Amino acid sequence: MATRAGRSGQHPGSVPVGVLALLVLLVAWWAASTEAEGSARPTASTVAVPPEPGVELLVVAPEARGGYDRDRFEHWIDADGDGCRTRCEVLAEERRADGTWLSVYDGAVVTSEQDLEIDHLVALAEAWRSGARDWDDARRAAFANDLDFPDALLAVTSATNQSKADHDPARWRPPRTETWCWYARSWIGVKARWGLTADQAEVDALAEMLATC
Image 1 (tube, rainbow, N blue to C red):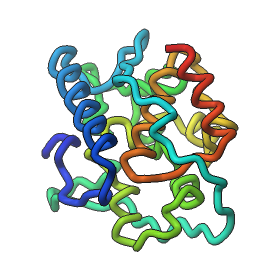
Image 2 (cartoon, rainbow, N blue to C red; image 1 turned 60 degrees about the vertical axis):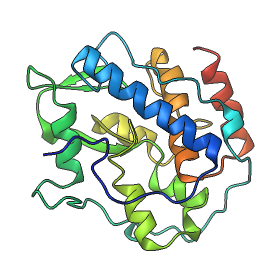
Image 3 (cartoon, rainbow, N blue to C red; image 1 turned 90 degrees about the horizontal axis):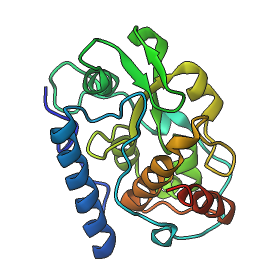
Image 4 (cartoon, rainbow, N blue to C red; image 1 turned 180 degrees about the horizontal axis):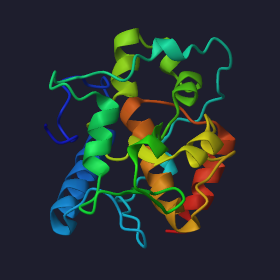
């Protein structure tokens, strides 16, 4: 089984050179911290914070409501044909040496994969409202199964996944305030990677979360 970084042959499409450079730095930082710490995920007491993507990377635009269909985002797929679909890949990577998982949003330590859900950091419906409505189905599937970008997909408790739903940071933040810096930077990274917009309330909320860095 390959690692999540660099697994898929699909790409999110053209991005500005500055954003591409930031993405290279983000992935390089993530790879380095993974090698140094022996895990791609934070411990129960710390949260890995990516380098400094700020709200200036986001294009501010109102959300376009209506027309969302979850079935237009095919998931979970087996991108490399190894018999392990996207959910399986995320669970395998985030499983810790002792066989448990850390749900980063709430800090819960989970012993059974049946108690975990795979969260799209930027929810599918949020992506739709922010530009994915204009994509073709292949690009939507690539977004829904993005194993190449750190923290685009996370194994979390059902309670926090259901609480988060399709909300953006103006309507939902992780209950662990110590994760807010990481969450805001990761959110911005995902949106910049895929060329998704952000509304003003979302940008303001992200700025507040970044102030905790």
